Amino acid sequence: MATPYLILICLVACCLVMALVWYWAIKINNAGVVDVFWALNFPLIAILLFFLADGFEGRKQLICSMVLIAGLRLGAHLWQRVIGHLDVEEGRYQQLRKEWAPHENRKFFWFFQFQAFSNVLLAIPFFLIASNQDPKIHAFEYLGIVLWGIAVLGEAAADWQLSQFKNELCNKGKVCQVGLWNYSRHPNYFFQLLLWIAYFLFAISAPWGWIAISSPLIIAYLLFKVTGIPATEEQALRSKGALYREYQQSTSAFIPWFKKQVSAEK
Image (tube, rainbow, N blue to C red; front, top):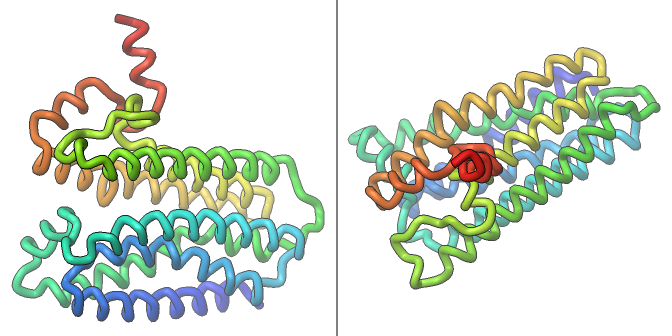
């Protein structure tokens, strides 16, 4: 199937999913569920590509498996975090609800639809890879697979460490500084960006593969300027105040090994 048709089918599917999720979010008064299904829309795209794309079968199986594993892992982590507190909406969305009142439901609908659009826009590497008919697996593709493995394991470790910290009642109101979080305020975001760089490397050997650079660039913009670090740190400052300010001064915002370097220099 031609790539434009694949993109259209995936866009319609993701928009339908987000429309249903929006309806559910209105019913339960918790927009935080959008995060879960944003992650799960990537496995949906992978499944559609597996059955509809006409690229080299071995490569298609590889990329679809990679997207499925990474998406389901993140989706399961977010599901556990959000579903465990359905009666309490995450602070970021509470803030949006206040800012968008009295038309918050309408604005949340378009926000959810934008998430579906971002799913498909970020999936550009997947479309290119799954449609690549070259039977040879190139060096950049192997490099992408290795980097993908590092990214998935690193992000899983960061998420697990934060979850374990939050599960301890004695840590309520404290700032997580265990494991990777001792060296970076956002190690999960660091490995998430690394994941999209891996997808770009995997796609670069495909025809028009250079276009896939858009995905890590978009993710970097979102993480640094929009819904990632700025929104997360604003909420952390609102909820933890001086404790988080001290944490900001002692750690890197992003790169996990920065704190060690600072300590060594001092």
